[in-house]
Length: 207
Image (cartoon, rainbow, N blue to C red; front, side, top):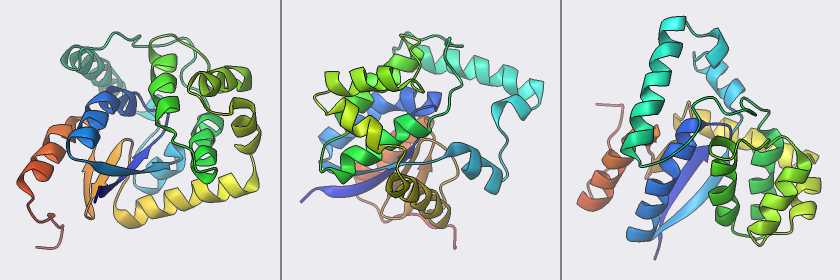
């Protein structure tokens, strides 16, 4: 029986993009069932003490650029450090994932196209027509999902993901939650694999 793992992310997150391929590899190797949970990053950051990129000290902003280059090489990717259409409002794109889940559809083919669309192709994921095409290319009903994404029901599910993230201890993207243990950031993929490989009990903040 597949082992469940919660995957908190936003399509506007470069780190979710960088970590997605190795995460998908783990999903396949360890037969995981992914619970996709798109989450609104701005609110999650503010509630947990983080700052949007533009409000961070220049020292932190400069270091982020170095880290992007390191991980670009480490993961064997080829992407723009400052893509033309980033930052963007991720609500519509994230909502497509929720709408696909609502319809009983697998959002993974869409994610595998949407992440590089931002960082490699410099497409605008706030543009409905762009999202329709990406979803269609993924074998999903693009127009139907884009039209459904802004609905109150999808907004409510998006908000619930934010509340669930806070309750679980997730405060950024990507966040992987295995048996209640949070692994924050794509640079924790290797630690996540260690946990899966060893079968150890989850660590807790209560010691």
